[in-house]
Image 1 (cartoon, rainbow, N blue to C red):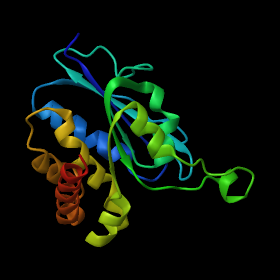
Image 2 (cartoon, helix red, strand yellow):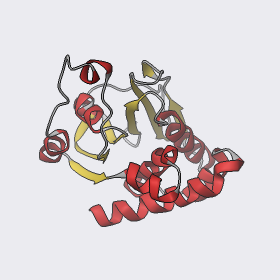
Image 3 (spheres, rainbow, N blue to C red):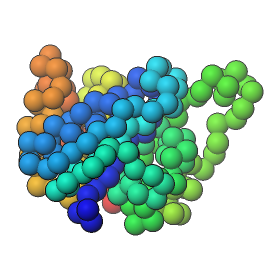
Length: 194
């Protein structure tokens, strides 16, 4: 089972981590990998922490993995990267969206948003940091931020799959062109960020 790879996608409910995992799962299945996708853990409603796991290889026995086992992590929100950091392997790659969403306790003033989230991750892991929200807004729709991040992660996956084709097949037809632009923009941003 040494060829099995694992990815962790984390964010806040409503950011689109599930769509990224569906794109990944579809791509790996089409390429002939055995692939398993976890159910979403956490509160899958807007505002709650959400994570999903994807594993692929010759033979994958289950979708869930433990701490220190993720080869790659995509964090759609920077505090979530720190929250789930212990799941990443020491030589893992973290793709982090430089974007903050204030939880209810932070918005109410009961807690403060932690400072230095990205810097903490950079001290421990190879990181690719981008402002996916700004890129998505430049493309005309902030909701494609998740696909920008998927574009940023696809080269780090280390597999030869036509991800543009998979994105086009997975997203709704009415937003296909927008998501293809988002994917390309994320891929380019990741190359510049490394």
